[in-house]
Length: 144
Figure 1 (cartoon, helix red, strand yellow):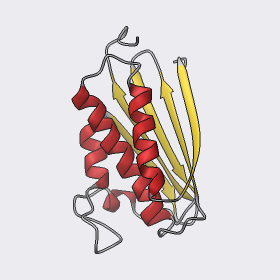
Figure 2: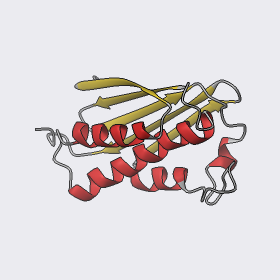
Figure 3: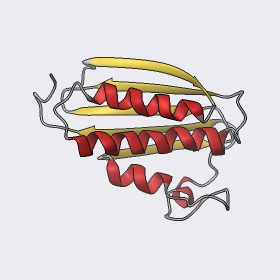
Figure 4: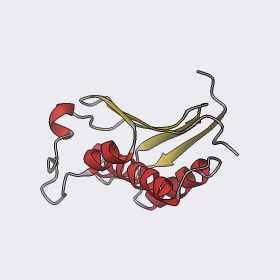
């Protein structure tokens, strides 16, 4: 499957950069014939993934790097978020509704990502970081 378009960004682990990633994700999706609701779902899913990196991977410390890659294929748009933070010891547990490593949080990030995107893959190792790959499928020929 050949990539038709790609954008790569490196973000410092600052909460201010969640909004930048969110807007960039929407702008990248705008090259497709998606509904406003579908674009909003992408924005929420990307926000959750980037926020997880800022809050959980780097503990709100601003010295971490988050890599954000957006790929457009013939039948799907893919978002990859990678951090090099604390990692996730138990991915299955972390994907459960209401689970959070921070008791002040609702623990719905992965739930939103999974419900708003057609594909979600999470890989992580403790102290090695986390990679979140999400994709939304569309009909071929939907690109402008």
